[in-house]
Image (cartoon, rainbow, N blue to C red; front, side, top):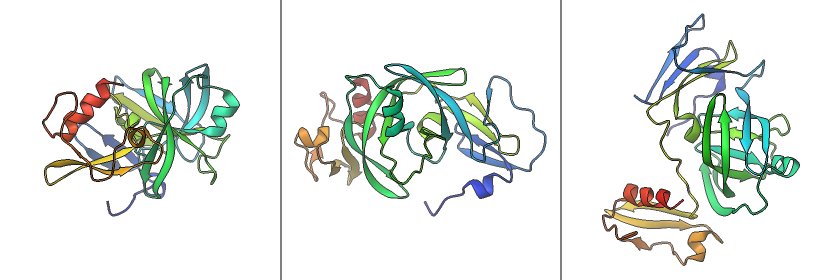
Length: 238
């Protein structure tokens, strides 16, 4: 990736993002008729797209979240919101893992939220990063965090900044499972071998004894050395 096209560019146009055919179409501002079978999220008069989203775990809360197609996650929760709302179950299991972005790697906590409702669409057992926002990035209490690409890519969307509208239509990825990354291990393919490249301190992978450089030859009697097949096995156990 050579860089980022951000708000200063996209706010001047109507943007159509199609995850089915992996295209982004850029149109001049004007009147637009949205396709049938979708839903328009209205973000009020906010500069950036922000939408009040329902989250349910121990209890149900509705709070504004930024919609960020550039964030490689499903949900980012500000820990202050968690403390103020007591939304998480008391016995919630939390894992230490690592999030990677343009700001580099950051050790974070990850858990699962029982339900998210975005407009009329509901998602269950959604992976969530718990974020200590010391730099005030999420602007709490203006926003409680982010809804990222792992959730938003389940829709083809039209972003209309001029009208403060975010149109969502379920696509072929809508029913796909979320990518749960609890292990705390960064696993890659090198020279046709599935190799552990990094292990987060105190993570499940660390506690299980995985070491950097370990070669994974099989999981649950699957000896294919196919990383995607291994990921599917891991998702089945969540």
